[in-house]
Amino acid sequence: MDQIMHDVIVVGAGAAGLFFAGSLPPGRFRVLLLDHSTKLAEKIRISGGGRCNITNLEGAKLDRYHGQEPRFARQALNAFGPDAFLAQFRRDGLSVHEKHRGQLFCDQGSEAVIRWLDRRAQLAGAQRIMASTVHAVRPDYDHGPCFSLESDAGPLRSRMLVIASGGPSIPAIGASDWGQRLAASLGLKLIEPRPALVPLTLQTPWMANAALAGVSLKVRVSLPTQRSAPSFDEDLLFTHRGLSGPAILQISSYWAQDQALELRWAPNGLARDFAERWVKQKATQRQSLERIFAGADPTLSMPRRFLQQRLGMSGAQLPELGTTIDQWPDRAIRQLGQILEHDRLLPTGTEGWKKAEVAAGGVDVTELDPRSMQSLKHPGLFFLGEVVDITGWLGGYNFQWAWSSAWSAARAISVILEGYLNERG
Image (cartoon, rainbow, N blue to C red; front, side, top):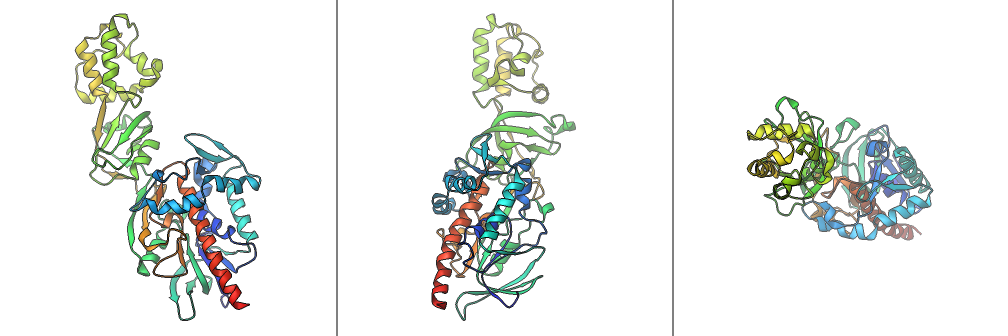
């Protein structure tokens, strides 16, 4: 096999690499998939607790992606968005269900998604070598685009080289920054990779005695010093080390060191507005605030442990929460509203690559053609998915970027290789 000139070698047998191979014309080209792991698509296998959040109904919306130049993603997402992906998925007998905010999960589970991707790649004629690391790549343009690879499988050659090796998030499954390092070695600019969709760490007083670990509540989180970053109304989870949950994972992709988070504890309204309402109506209020916060008023539900910790940190001298509202002084009600309005918290860092779901950063998109994902410096070299500086929100967006970028590259490479076949007669 090492003497064959392949038409395409794909480094990375994950979501983007497998989908790319399966999007080529069946049996038309000599395609080889390489992966350093012994298993296919490990990130798919663990996604969504084994269900795999394969895409999002709003997966073509550009504002759900970020990077130095998120507009780069527009052409690929418009050319092959969620509808196009789902049409192929359903055509082959698989089905999905929506869980939350457009998130689509595979009814048959992650293993079915992997089998589907593998079957598509095999139908396209792709061969596969697993447990094979690529140690060196050398472009050769003396006789048209050609790439020589040194790998555990021996020396290999290919006209086209596709890098779909992902990023360094979740190293426990073998993830690494190999693709980003390769790009840098070939002279391409990089946006420094960093953990994204990752829990954040905190210090005291919020973490005192881990009193809040396991407590979850709905919040609105934003970055007051970064106006371009969106705010997120999602659940927050206190952990033994800091903050997690969808709200924090989302904002973490925009967060930078020394930036404070603003957390509104009553995202459906201002706590001080609730306080003013209670002041006006307190003569007829016979409920305790403890009961209201426990869920009697769903717009202001807050866990008791959180309330105790937050009020204790404030040092305010307030009546017991079990006291009915009509027994609270107006001043104390308003003070409570101010305390629960919002807080600014300064994270000390993230929980790093081991907990990050994706990598932000990667190959600078100014180095690539947005129509094809091809390198502008090295014709025949393509970068897909997470290895590129495009990162999606939590909820299926990063898989959609994998499908869209892979499909765009497959269409472009098919046209190029058809030209070579025609030349060969």
